[in-house]
Image (cartoon, rainbow, N blue to C red):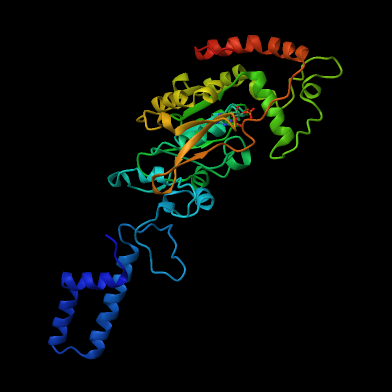
Amino acid sequence: MKMSLNSYVYHEEQTGILPRAKGLCCRRVTKTKILGLLVLVGIGLFLLTISGPHYDMNQKMESGSRRRILPKITDYMDPVDKAKFGSVGNNRLDRGNIQNNIPFHKKRDYRQRLPTCLIIGVKKAGTGAMVQYLKLHPDIVVADRELNFFDYERNYNLGFDYYKTLMPMSYEGQITMEKTSNYFHNKETEWRVHSMNSSMKMILLVREPIARAVSDYLQRKLKDKDTMDLQPTFEELIIRPKNGKINEGYPGIRPSFYYKHMVRWLKYFPLTQFHIVDGDNLVRNPYEEMFAVENFLGLPHLITRDRFVFSEKKGFYCMSLDGVNGTRQEQCLSKGKGRKHPDIDEGVMEMLTDLFRPLNQQFYKLIGRKFDW
Ligand code: A3P
């Protein structure tokens, strides 16, 4: 119920508290006592207001305004989204609208929670797209940046309570998630995740390992730059000049050794706690991959096919998001996602194919599933 301070006074009059005060007056109580009583009633009303059922302790008083009792849509969004999208009605995409679809009776126990599902990688296999697509589901909330909690000892040592403070707000029943694409290939991560929650669910995206390594190289070279300054070249970094062999120590290639990393994770978690996403198919058919993710998480299928619109300009699928007044607006991933890859020397390609072939086969055996690479 929306109530201003004034309406609380009205409400109290209706419920008879003030009439009882009037009754006291009729028993010839002194003016000082009446004043004292009114002050007490005022304090009581004030306390009632701040502890009312809709009041969220995280809400702040808006400058110069009365206390807001009902939360705004932006209150459902985490601070980064809030900053990015501003308040509703200002013609920007209303990312909070997904949360609006939650029935009122489900909007309970709004607070930060530890994640129960992690997107652990692998970097450059479509993890950014995965996060954006997951956000289309009203039962999912995802931390808005990579937190590197389990792969950085310093962060992990800050403890799980600290980690929780970095999580977005969620309602009871919503799944909280975090994505750090370095988790999969960094040692130590798996036991640290296990130490927090042995029932953790893991989403792992994989992609043809050579294309992934090239993508990793481009990311390292270009980051957010517009230039195409590719010096030294991929070939120069991936081949050791001394012996002409593959430099397996090049950091851009390490995440592609899926078999080695998966063996480590499976020492701590059963395969059933992983969902492996075909990153190449996520590019071609995002709906199909997200349908499988919804299955894995035991969620109703609410990420509908019409949310994905192919953009000729971008050359990738973009999302169709709800705008204001029932409109839809297209949102593509940032320019750092979906880069044009350089042609790679044929000899180097052959060497890499030979290196990865047996590892890929072992990976398929380990997970009981084949890919076309
Ligand atoms: P490229 O830039 O090499 O094409 P990550 O988010 O893990 O860094 O992965 C980036 C990769 O996501 C991109 O690699 C691209 O292939 C893939 N991707 C998947 N869906 C995409 C989409 N809708 N838009 C852009 N890139 C997408």
